[in-house]
Image (tube, rainbow, N blue to C red):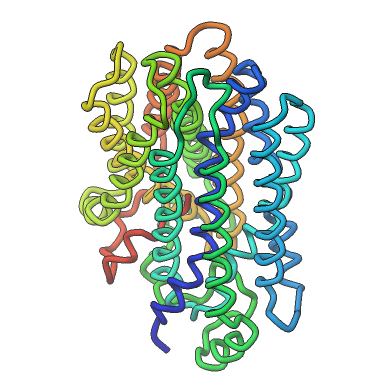
Length: 446
């Protein structure tokens, strides 16, 4: 059975919808908290960390619940439909509250419920792809899902640029048109998904048509590519029945590196929408250009980076990516006003981020045996999410109590620290084989 590209694209509509919302959340909720409700940067950062804290609990719980669910419309679809319906309703209420009220506690209460509702269906939405895709095609299918998610984020950035017109006072910015555009986008994409992808009917067809389909909806199956995508943990990384101290040391430094570069990058993506206002006096969603450039550059870089990694190895590619990002962080810190060259810096940051993302997760799982890939995947996400809980709070404290100009030096410091810890990683650096198709170069974990 070949990969059904049309069906995979339609399945990707769920992730596209989710990413459209999170792009708004990451960029505009901090602005609402800061300018409309007058919240300090430290508390703004703490609230922005809520989604990652909730994700640590909600994603595995609802992923497991969807595994055990069996309805007339499937295992995952009920969570996606109900979760989307509740989320868009709460999203509309949230923005309406920001429009007519200054009641911070009410806003936070609705925001908390919205984050919970979003967390209830992300895992089922992601699991829908492996549920309806033969195991040997999941790598390529995951690439399509990632691309669909990127398109959702770009849609929101375009809408921010087109619809978000700041008032003379930032506190009076009207978010209603932007919210409506995202709500309609989310509803339409999920309706198309529901109408065109009959999960319940497709499940037995996929299972009966492919011998190696695991039937559990897991992200990792008996993939035909497993012999090449994880070409056997090297003898240097395993001895007898356990790992050597050197491998554990390398793993520790790699996970620390993951924490550090997420701390750097997430600080910029979370605070940049306010940075351009406070430091460069730019308004009307001007920050969206830079973030869109970074996103598109990262997507375009996946293919060449995959080819480069196959030539020079993962570790060196990651170090080059960190170096590029560090140089751009410090260059941005030296700019006293906005210039079009900033878009070039962000394009390079996007390329550097792609170089890290394409290679870091494979390096983590390379240090583990095939039967514990799930465990090492959990470690990877634990450290990346921990960074995204820590950095909005700590960087927010510096922005509030020192200066907004600490943003890029902060990112530079953590990025340089990641470079140092990455130098100490001595294992997991096999040169990956070239991908069988262009799409597989987009198969990254974000």
